[in-house]
Image 1: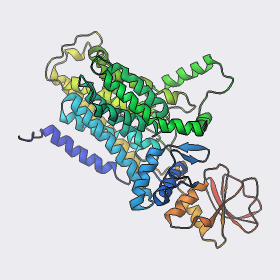
Image 2: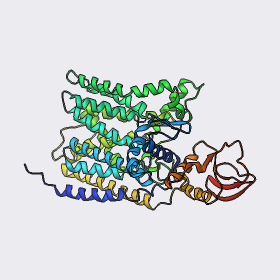
Image 3: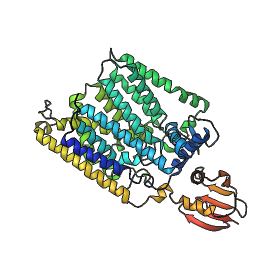
Length: 504
């Protein structure tokens, strides 16, 4: 059996893909700069798990990791711990894990595109566009739990598409879907709401012949939730502590007030200005000055949405995609933040899927059979004209994505967003002979910087003593202080939110 030869277009896109991959992994350990406190917490606990099987509090293989007033999700931490077991603690390894997870998501979405459109070049195009899209790329630069989510969701959608092509679901497919839903639950906080909603959406596939597979998927998913149920029973309210600080839902608010705020937030998450011009206002999540999505990709997704309504609305698979798009903003719409990149991470994944029927439509070599008032122009265009439009949109995405990557790599370092100057603070304190070094933090989180950077240098953590912010350290002590005023002290170094001084 002969291997199908690559067309000129496929060779071109393959070359572009290789070039984009090189750019994608460039400076992976240096940009984003520094190592934010949440990244340090995840990496430090991954290190302690890799070394001794316990977290920073001495708990053996916890389901959730306690961290300064909240609990971090386990999937990313255990993946990183598995790597640290062989490499030791490393910023490069941690950031490379997130980058590889982003690459896996792009590969899975590209494979899905090639199967939906039945064109290999379409898969290569989607693969490249995913890697170039600011939203997906910036997530892959952060050592955050959410970095796993796009890969899991993309794998789930690919497997679900395979299931949708069959009249009966095999037990392997059903079990795989259930496991992936379960993993999404334990990957990031939004998964505890979205995974059950995705599971509920499987009702679209409930037929006389496939119902057993759908039910088996639900059973496997339910079994996967048992550890979560046990943890919640033993630690009531623990997983909701963070939510209390980020939600606008407060005691005393009326239902109409909460409903109105939810609708405003929900609609705001679909604002084209946020997608294409502003992006996430948090500089840690998004490089200011550019939108989070590529304009050509949004145009294709909008066309794909219209095509689904006109041509595919009776197909369970496409109904699920529209449903997934609709429920994706729900967790983010319950919080105070405006257009939060992390909590909206499933939104771009579904938008990428929506581009696929548009690519198939524009690339068709025959006249479309659909005639509709909603597509008065495109349905009358000849195939050559439609393919020209697709080529123009593809070129627009490549150019805009290239501009973003250049800006990302040449933009001034976001030092304040990542507290990238902390090693200078730590080294200034370590240069003094006095021990222990007192860590005096306004918030209960900043101590983790000292723990992580000391671990990277192989230093014993007995060199440090966490201090109570309401009591002054003893006279003569070296202090690293976070956002607290220095009184009766000799200043050594001050950078950003941190200062090193000797207490008098």
